[in-house]
Length: 457
Image (tube, rainbow, N blue to C red):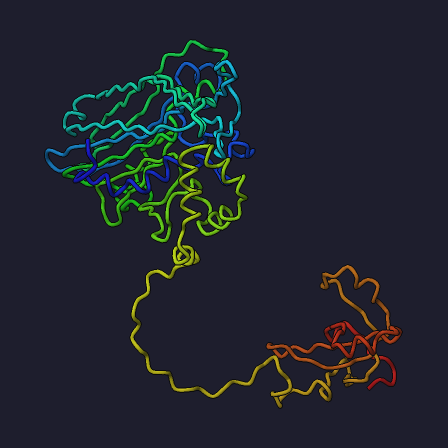
């Protein structure tokens, strides 16, 4: 089924980013450690292999809410990758082939690596039929093998590329139920299952992946009706949203402003995800910044780029795109300003007289730390007075225990915004008192935490 005219074309760019997320990561070479363990998102392994012990699922489930109109139709598109083993074989003098990790032929490098073949399964169902009975749409992906000779410029055979893929069997189960209440809401359920026959119980993940649905995700298009957002539902729909059970997938609205299209993704997204218009193409790492990845790719050596081109045709396309990127495209990646709008001019307000800063005694004539004083008992204490320190229990600094009974000199009398008095003091026996005072480094005490010494008034 063609996407043209169905609405699915609106979702394709974002869906492709989901399909190829992590497909092959920078520096796009098979020898890179990060590309040794692949296929991390949306993997549905064969049922029997999953049930034998590994934690990876063999099915996923999407549940969404719809407000249907009469004769509503649900269109589905399941998309996934099928792993395809690409093996490089070198020819010996007798023409016999043997597998090798890589092979250089006339300056081009060919690398053994698993590729991804993309598939789509389409279905169209009347919602009334699904309400009446759950529907199953089986699908089968055939095995395949292709051989591509690798010849030198002189016509001699250097080796060959062998591409092989294994069969996959699966199904879409689609059901629906009408929920109680006055709003006529229907809950739609779509399950994707991998029921590929499996007889290799001792085989590991690499073998299972070749019979798996990889990066599996589903697009749902409702004709004559609308979906309800599961992330930001109207208040009346919240109880119904709470009943939806989504396993190994995350449904979001797609197509800005539309309510008839859902992307059920193995990656957590917000409603209405989009690809930045500045992006020149996929880099298979949507969590990165295009500019950073592009600059890093430009910095690869010629040997590294040659290996990346030989690793995978999609990796080769990235290298070629970066190598030929015009400067104006790179500049466009540097940043963008969105959602600018005209703001009506507002006349400036009448200037108000500046208030006296409470924190600056230099401009507040009502305070004078140099000459102000405070009464402690019947003694007026001011700058130059001698006091003995008696820090109280309300102070939180454990170091205050070393100040008890120490003699100090008052350097200033200060007042806070609540007009409470504080004394800035320096220790009388501190040889660094002058240096600390020059930098305004004092100890601070409330009047009831000091004892005036005789003759200090």
